[in-house]
Length: 317
Image 1 (cartoon, rainbow, N blue to C red):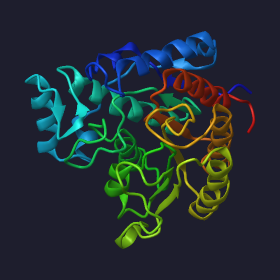
Image 2 (image 1 turned 45 degrees about the vertical axis):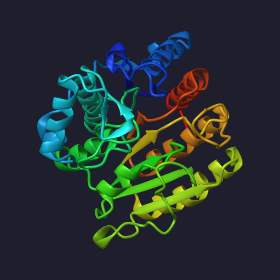
Image 3 (image 1 turned 135 degrees about the horizontal axis):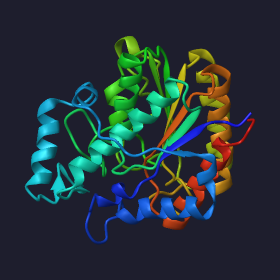
Image 4 (image 1 turned 30 degrees about the vertical axis):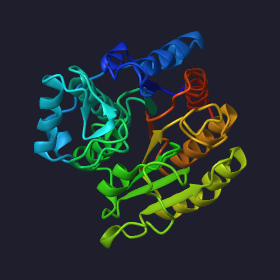
């Protein structure tokens, strides 16, 4: 039986202009579009148009004043927000709303059973965005906005977020660390920006134990990366039994990436996708959505996304 799959891959995400020489550039979205086109994957995925996030969904995660500050800064023509690495343009607030809204829309379609799984090739990325602070190229925290939507609007009780970006998702951790119903799992390089993500960071209050960090030293490759997913992630997921799986799918742990020091290969992402898809199949009726985070070598990014999508589309794990 063919798996019904959906994606949001659209030129609209190229309108977020970060300026010359910036690593998180429009060419990233263009490279993904071109790679999936060359791979002939369109016949296996249903294209969905990007949609802006609602105020209701966004305000569950970010302070209202922060949202307005993002909008004012972009409208006024400012070029950075909160930190020098988070570049913006006049279109950025709108594109960031499309990024968060597209993650929500894919999750809603999967939760309703209209598609089995999905992928959102969005930018700006989101996992560094805090409740009231832009940082690390991120404006709104796309995966947390989607997770909160699933909890409140779709009645999903337990959500697993797997973050395999080379950088730790400080914003995702901090926004969720007191929630026992969202398991945040991160495998990332350490030491590296933003300096969070130690194993000792395990959540707080009722969420203690629902944060699992697995830092890897520079130079780690497929062996260490996949051992972490097969061991720590699988064990945590078996105990948690998620009803929905979201992947913060950064591809900057790739050996070719200029911003990290891990040595994961494109084949490593194939194996990683099999692992998270297997978890989704065992516990969550296959419900899986991945949302693009980092990945800054254009060839490696395109190849890794294609490998990820082909593996998601396989008939059996």
